Image (cartoon, rainbow, N blue to C red):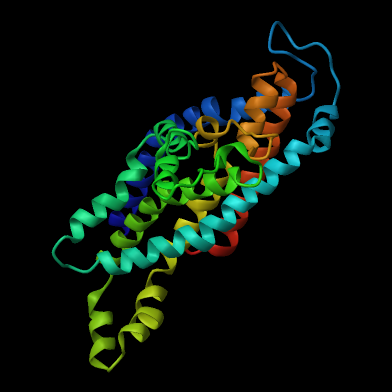
Length: 294
């Protein structure tokens, strides 16, 4: 018994020594070093050319928080998170509970709802920029059937962000739906059948048996939704580029517009550091409080 235990320990340490160093090397090259460089550059007034020499300390961070558009970007990211949690995930869960059952056409419907997630974000943005076009797009055609003039949703600060939110829900709910379907198909059916034999109604079965068994997957889906919402960028740029009047910026589009496009690399690096801190804080806190046993 002791020899077998030693053999398992030796195999475990051999696997650690074999696989951990390459993973740590890649993590250091692609995560730790870029994050450290961004922190260093954020202390300079630098346009990206030559070596940074104009040290300004924490002024870039002050400039970021003093910028009105950054406050709008933070608010928009929070709005995306709320819509993802309140609309997108319940929609995905409801469809998963329906499509996890075996009936004619279920597989085809799953693929139909999952197809938007396969589309590249840039392609999705280009498609919906045509759909929302008030002059020649699909929306204009629909309004034309009723003899009305179509609104220009992406050209108004009041409607640009709601229009983007519709695209976000359409684009990503299929991913979460497939996560829930996979969890439902891997669920212990014996527990469900026992509850059904005990006389549980369909609603009671879903509420007290199925959904509690889905809690680990729901927590994982919430994590993906929040982190993805914080990093939202590819859909915003082809639709509005953060406009009009900076009303639809997210943190990443703000970084790109005010940092990269305007050659303020130090300023953009400060925004990147802020975003990294927000994401890392959320990830570690969420893992500590909601996924500690997983």
